[in-house]
Length: 508
Image (cartoon, rainbow, N blue to C red):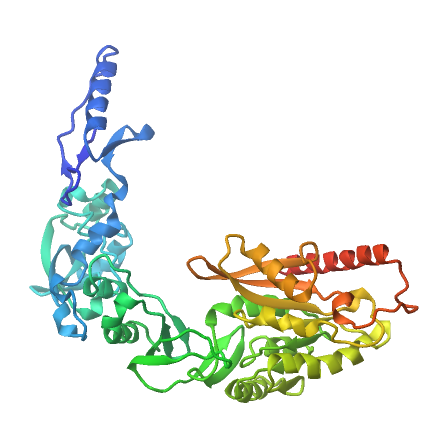
């Protein structure tokens, strides 16, 4: 038995089921007939052979998504709309339905999962307007055309439940509420243009980065984002890069509330702030968690560009001592607030200084005390520098920061410095730039972690390394604790950092 399903290439129509014919088992006829038929069909456009099943079908699923957009897409006359008119999205589509007795609907639906309409927001079972004792089951218009479209198992269940497989048609009215945000924007924006359907969510705020061709539709896009995402009451668009000393950016409210005071929940911690005045990126949640996992209770963290506390607060919760700084007065205010909100204000010392002043002031003073402690009491020290656009420049503050005798290399601070790179080899680029500022090579004593792709050909990375004593200390005269020959000392320092990299790798 050979079943042929065919659709002319380039047309979106129904399958034409050709008449099935039995082929005799003649040894001489089968190879000739099968070979000829196969060759003929393989040469026909839009047809291919389905392996060992010995059936022919159209190209896989015939672009089910594309076919669906033909039927379940907004009316074409909304193209170019810049002010949202929800009433213009009304559309009537013809849907196949199956009439059944209302008491057997639940039992029947379990057997009609394949055939039933799977469209979010549209009820699959509705009342029969002509018979209150019956219901109409909406069927997939791309799978069910006539009663012959049902599979054998489905027909068997229909027969057992005494349901006629006869298909009827139902005029279904679609409205603005029935369309997805992406479908609405694709129908409105110029054909072929990129569609914005994603955004960063900061509490009740949807933060978009619109491209130039989308700007004429910005207010409509903002309203669609609010309409289609429960809990979103304000949509904003960034209108400049983060290029000022406070790391915030100018934004325009596209639609909804003007209120930028928001509350977010990240990794089980709560943060409140004014989004228009501070920096917050929900895409860094995983990175905040990754760094937090590297520290152990009792360790010390210096957070040079702390923002509102996404590194400082989780680390403090691990019973670590934290020194957190941010130059932005608003970030400083909300950092203090969030430390109290998350009950770690006794473990975090907060500063409002320039990053360089913070490193050469409070950090220097604390390091002198920490690294001067006896070996048994020295904690592991980490420095986080999350200012990707400029953090590498601040590494110069570590050069000859400390006076006195160098401590053992295993206690030297570990730096996690963030940067952007557009280089073809971003990891190598970051290593070279950081090494150039410090005046050393970081090739063999650093690890680079890819944080995220920021834009096409632009990566955000984190380089981690232990500050060499030759960089950190002004004078390196030997002392009883530091009397090894230079080659041996370099080897042990490399081994210590290798252990650190192993720990980092195991935690990530």
